[in-house]
Image (cartoon, rainbow, N blue to C red; front, side, top):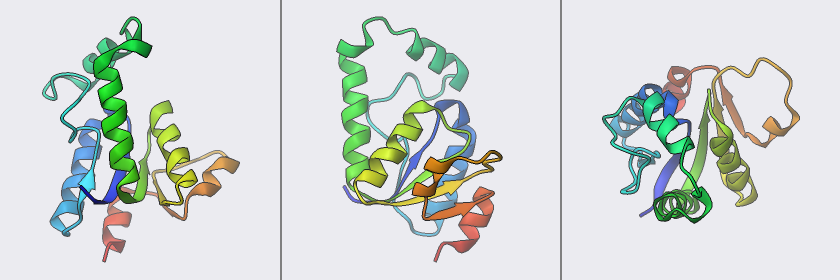
Length: 139
């Protein structure tokens, strides 16, 4: 499947991610989030903090089959996306996805306030302080 946008995010930011994706879909955009893949961290109805704590406590994560499936699903979606959005606050994995997208030549968009100087954030082609400002710019 092809996507207009891949939203790199953190599970703990679930409500904001789903809100942004929903608004983009209303505008006719095809969006991938980590909540859309068949493979997922855990029960999608579970509290994001609880789900992340369980995930982060996974022993032998390097050889865990479910974690490999999550990785493969997310990376395939990233490869098949035109644009990447990094929605702040975001964790390590989301930042790695942003770097991978930049390396793949994807158009990269940052949504959220970055208060400190960060040279690596120059990978982003567009910056928006809020999701609503970004939504208002979608054509």
